[in-house]
Amino acid sequence: KAGVTQTPRYLIKTRGQQVTLSCSPISGHRSVSWYQQTPGQGLQFLFEYFSETQRNKGNFPGRFSGRQFSNSRSEMNVSTLELGDSALYLCASRDSNGYEQYFGPGTRLTVT
Amino acid sequence: QQQVKQSPQSLIVQKGGISIINCAYENTAFDYFPWYQQFPGKGPALLIAIRPDVSEKKEGRFTISFNKSAKQFSLHIMDSQPGDSATYFCAASINAGNNRKLIWGLGTSLAVNP
Image (cartoon, rainbow over all chains, first blue to last red; front, side):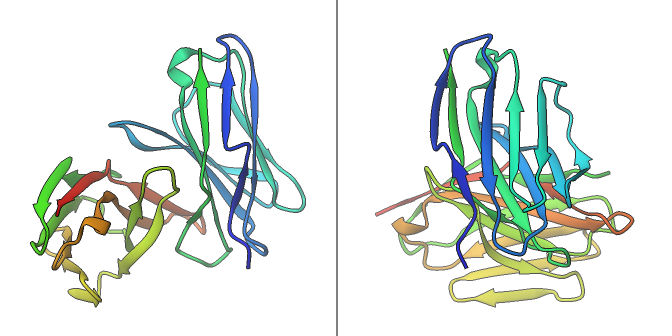
């Protein structure tokens, strides 16, 4: 099976703009989680989607939103970008009964 | 109570030495404890995992030691190699009402000197 894919891999945006990141999970996986990773902060959980419904949510402001489509592909949107949003954004998928999360390579977002 | 505390934050080991990373948790409802390895520019990948009914699990040079009474678990990397240089994350999984959650440690940056 193909792994988790994320597009784009790299992105440079200006403060105040918005951005949309995309994630395609492993075929058959219905759960998609998003994480923000910055140096020294580990993996900060953003949200999880399962069958098009947000199931869990981390402690991020409302500028961060997401959605999941019927084919389990997911998008994450960040509006009104701030310099502090510069990070590696990781997507992970899991099957319904599985314990393990499988990560994509991430999207490196730089906000200038 | 949902936290997983990981230490040390960074670790430098000589080639051939033993790398040890520790994690501690509070919630006894956690029922699955994975370790993930992340190389620069890549997403984390599952390395090894253990359930609380087992005290030790070994896969090649990687061993998880689990102490249920102390609520601690650790990753041991035997005969550490420069290729093991990466960031390691411990995690703990809990089933919260048919909704499985994964709680992460903050990570340990391991450097193995040749």
